[in-house]
Length: 127
Image (cartoon, rainbow, N blue to C red; front, side, top):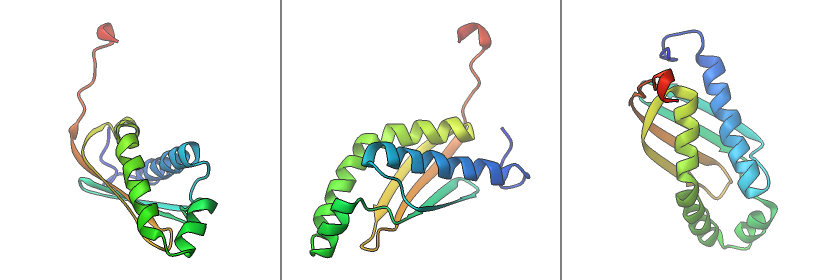
């Protein structure tokens, strides 16, 4: 796969990453963020998601319980991390070495992926 930091295909690849991450949020949280922007520089992909809270989470945050919401989200993110990894690896063709996830009181979330080497192609005879 071409390195998107140096080829014209980068726009399509980062747009696909944004769509995939928003889709995971929508499927598992019941709604997706309203805005997403992905940046890929060298070995780091950063996806910034806005308006990421569900209605129930927004009620809790507005009631002063942000830390509870963040702890719950972190536990959930830990469980679905393999899905995030597999998605990024499928789109980029590169191994994900590290995943980081965070959200702030304003409902802005960051999904960060540190990439490793290219994933070797599996010979057709073994598929």
